[in-house]
Length: 367
Image 1 (cartoon, rainbow, N blue to C red):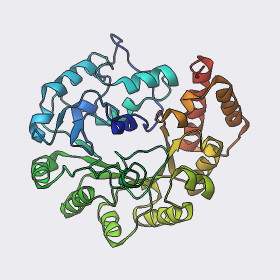
Image 2: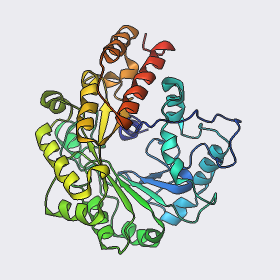
Image 3: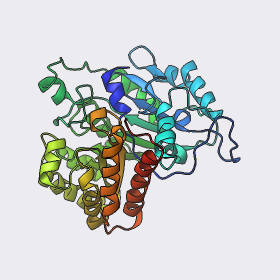
């Protein structure tokens, strides 16, 4: 597993879910797989590797450098993963969700984020959901990131050569056959509003008479005429990464960005697509847990959704590798706060606190 693979495992948008399915557990008639990602989704990483989702780094479906998109979608690896999940088995590279079940007490589970994509047939001819991290091009050096996901870190912190570009003309030519079937395109990884390949894809989507639903995870630092056109034409959902409620904490974590500038662009995003299509993405970690309530209150004042990413790596930044005594202090700190929250913001607060309480109660903290 490469360093970048480890980092893809480090975060997952946390959503409230019902109890997960285990091997051999009963399912309702409507639920026929533990996760629907491999039945509907293709995740393209910055190296050209294709997976079912960003968290399954152990069982790739294929590689665009050596296979066509059709070959990848119908590959034996894809079939094995689909069959495993239909049997309720998370063991075929889906260990991240297994970790969530063990450590978070099944309150939060990444796999449930794909439930709305459940197809009408078990082996659809085309994916309907794309997740694309086509490049590591990024202008920030966030403390929890590395050079496989940020070109700035790769050049300035690690002094490694640039990643080769793998998504060229051949890839975009193949996409044309898939475009009529895709319903949702999600762009993430690096900074999509800077990378050559993601911008090329966004420009192509702007040309369609009926473009799919688009979601873009952005660091919120880029606003120019091209971005304004993309946002105006596609009206994407925009997830803006905000990891500090104060300028100092924000700058400490998101090196190269400033909070006031990102909030100004958040205003611009809201002005173009509407408040309901803009959200905050919070990477909850040791360096900002003391501002977690403040971050949610920021979202509350703006009346926007705030999602929380569960950080696993680097372990030195994760709440889930704290020594027991420090974990106790962290839980006590959160319990002492009484943020004034409503709707989804309150559920996010309660869910994250409950997950840490479960982690503490089960003795899972570092010894």
